Amino acid sequence: QRRIAEEEAAAAAAQAEAEAQAALAQVKSEAAQAEAGLAAEAEAEAAASRGAAEKLSKAAAKGSDAKSKALESARKEEKKAADKAAKLRAELLAGEEALAAATADTATAEVEARVAADEATAQAAALQARDAKLQTAAALAADKAAAAAAAEAEATEKRLFFFFPG
Image (cartoon, rainbow, N blue to C red; front, side, top):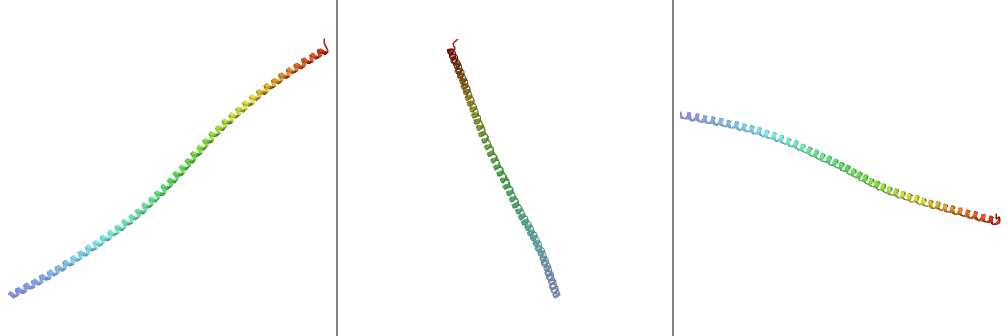
């Protein structure tokens, strides 16, 4: 009986060990599957992260490119505006210089006109003075001629009276 009990105990121990081995194998298998699943998930997440990082990198590159283009465009526009402002300043300066020259020319012309008018007035006054002198001289000459004619007439009369008295 004892031997039967030992054999049964040995058989039960063998069966328990076999079940334990089977359970351990199943646990290992499930652990391996879980680990494989976790590894696959981790790889998928890593791939997704890499994809997202690449997208972000591409977006950042596009953004940087767009920023560069916008800055370049802004620089070009700023240069155009500066060139236009410089051109307008130059035109304004040229206009101011032309106005100053025209003002100076006008002032010179006014002075020259005044000088010419003064000269003409002086010449007219000189001509009037000369005309007055000529008129005076002509009047004196006429008076002298009349006096000479009167003296001649008186001398003739005296001669006639001398030769033909009474």
